[in-house]
Image (cartoon, rainbow over the protein chains, first blue to last red):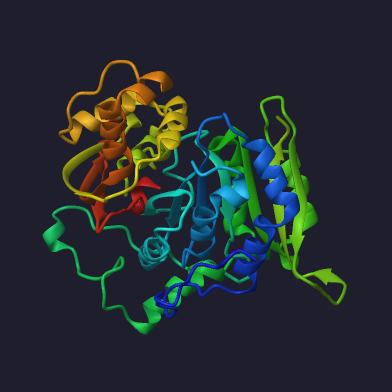
Length: 258
Length: 127
């Protein structure tokens, strides 16, 4: 068992607390099948891989990847980046990394606030990890307001991540981490659609789904993505236990053959 | 955020994606900090083939670092010249942008950086 990064400093009133889904990602990324897959895909000498986690929240999964890069990807020269819509989550992710500094293998570049991978350069990402807001809900919460347009001194204080926030604002930030809209797929569908743009030719992704997301349909959709002549593959590589005959949570690995 | 990050990010505005002017984003009023990080030569050697060197040259100059050479150093040059290695390490791995803005060269939108966290959320009229 590889050590799990400490997240005791994270304000769980407004940042998603590591739970069964986070731990399933850790278990899957460090499982023999995935370390073998990643180790052979990113065998040296090849350029340094960039790992991006969308929605790192507490940072527990990304910091695990950074800290154990050599074990998971077979090399120390891995750079990692987190993008979260919640500014508190960006802070938490950076803090989780700095607390783990010293025994890390990989290099954490930073955490940025943003809407999924919209600000990521085309074909830059080699390993994408996404634990989405997957719970089916009637509607999606409103995103945090962007910084007000200039003049900045007119901006009302505290709306996008400066304390204090109200209970209602905290609840909305938390809702962004779990509420997935129709079939719990509204946010995930946008990330899936962006995969051909974001992933490099050798890129792969680890996507968490719950039973309510209709995983077989999601995987079929991924296999139908535009792949520039190379077929997209999507296979379940990690599962939580069965519940009433269904896999409650699963991790889907997405890639194209080299 | 480390300076290297700018090599992987672009303007979030959809209509800027097709414009080469949207990359790299241009730092403005940047306040920098420097972490003390142990040099990892293998990281730099393996980063070079995947870095957009011209973009890095632009970023480096705009942040007030000495002009980088027109061509990236080869792995042999990195191995032989400790100063080149240390300078690149200092720029890419040790330097953090803590405060300031990132400006798109195509649409002019400014993304704020505060406490080392850049904010790429767009106002609704740009989404």
